[in-house]
Length: 426
Image 1 (spheres, rainbow, N blue to C red):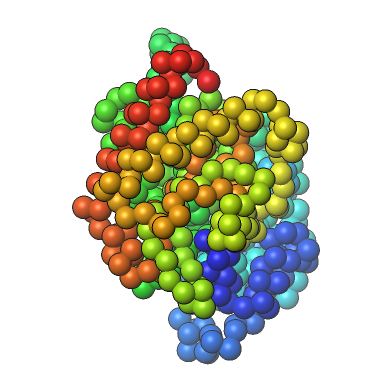
Image 2 (cartoon, rainbow, N blue to C red; image 1 turned 120 degrees about the vertical axis):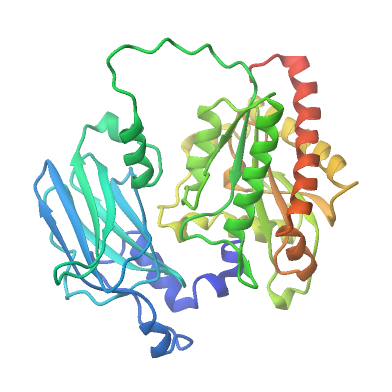
């Protein structure tokens, strides 16, 4: 879905090359974004916020990144490891920074680079000199003759603490620390929650918008649906529901798999919405995908290839967990695939009576996000944003409520039968 609409996402081959070199580490730190494409007129470029300067201050214990702007902007910052970096997602910014800025480091930051990830989205990547965490991340309004400023404050930490940091926004992290109760009296341990875990994965997020049509972005459509499904399951109280994201945050594909495995999930459901380029005609209806080494058809292969490139748009080095290659012939993996296929058929059986389905609703391909070796996993394409009638349904609350209900019924049917056989643990 992301690269399936590559002409909408990366504005041509030149922009793709620039983004790839920047985010996959080939660019020189401080490299500016590529010149605007022919479609971007000077008037369009002038409407973007302008970054006029960037600098570092502080030392190896506490380091501050400062970006001067002509207007306040929204942003999202998070820490990632391997390699150690701070990533800041921004709306599209016109970077007019001094030549060579970002090449020299200071304190906790070895250097930084910046550029356009996709139309509508820019990114700053700071390479870290050692373990660090984001203490604060905020935007200052213009005051006392100084322009608006984006500020990211880093503090030194240890390796173990850094690797425990979740991929989440700095603002969320700071707020979590601010409201944490004082550790004066140890809290009584909570009883273990023995309910089955269902992980709901809203596809895309952050700079990765997914497919787009008539002003609607896939990342927003699927997040709204995923949250509605979570609320429906939590209201019933039968499962512990874990979301891979609850806001507009970019989560790497492998991280989504790790969340499911860490939670010992009984089921992983990845929610998406498809699209076809105009030259490939029209299609409509929901589809359900499972993992397979060989794609069930050309459309499934195209979709898997597109989805598996999502990390390139988000700025994460593409890599596979070594365990994935090793377990493909393992009996545990075969058993997991059997359960995944069983749930896919159960889900189709529930949905086909109330939800418009694709003419070939069950498909399979090598989706990276479905490669947890011990968690039954499916990827659900709710419909085609490229189809007018499908898009009307995708943004309809009535359709969403009906579809969520059928999906919840399928989950009840599948987990009820499975847990009666194998017990509460995976």
